[in-house]
Length: 288
Image (cartoon, rainbow, N blue to C red; front, side):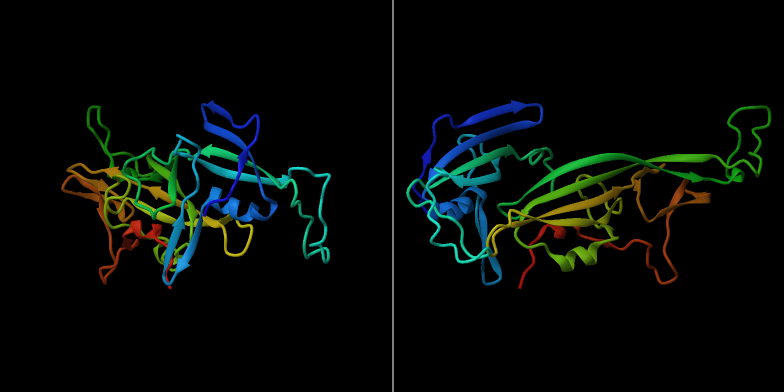
């Protein structure tokens, strides 16, 4: 779709700082075109049967990773309105057929969208950003498991002395931007499960999917707009004596096996506390 426009005097303005790139452009278009012009700038999805057709957002010229994040629509000449479309407080607004509309488009960097090469693949038009936080857990281990490493007798620790061991852990968030249709069924099914294969470089069984916060983005008319999905994960990877990592289904036992106290557990039917799944399926659209 081609919409006639004019970029106004004094536009654009570009700001570059430690947080990325921000730019502002001002356009003049016909008043009746502002909704379609907004769709062009922001991008949109259209459902075709059980699939989605994506119209990508228009990036800032020569800056493909800087896209529109905010639009402001106002009359180009606010003193010359046409109120014929107003039928009630909820039907119709002033129009400005003579001077048209002024569109202010704010562009911003899609921060961290390319920060990691091992991010999961996502559908065209969407992108992921990554944020990590530090964490730890502390477990108390009975003194009878330990002995003094030095001294005349290398005796066992007193039974009432239970050393606390701090285990470093990570929590991280993947934010999925401009999503056409979250896969609600997969989100529910995978909550509380661990990765069945390597996920963001972490070995199988070490990343736990905690859940997601979901919000609407850029919804302004009809079915236009997107979703933003904030996925929360926790990583637990304890080095084993031999090789490999102990994940969420490993627990500390008093008697070591092969030199390791961390051992996988399961119930009498062979079920582990945390079931596993392919976490990459979180990043798929809902289907019919």
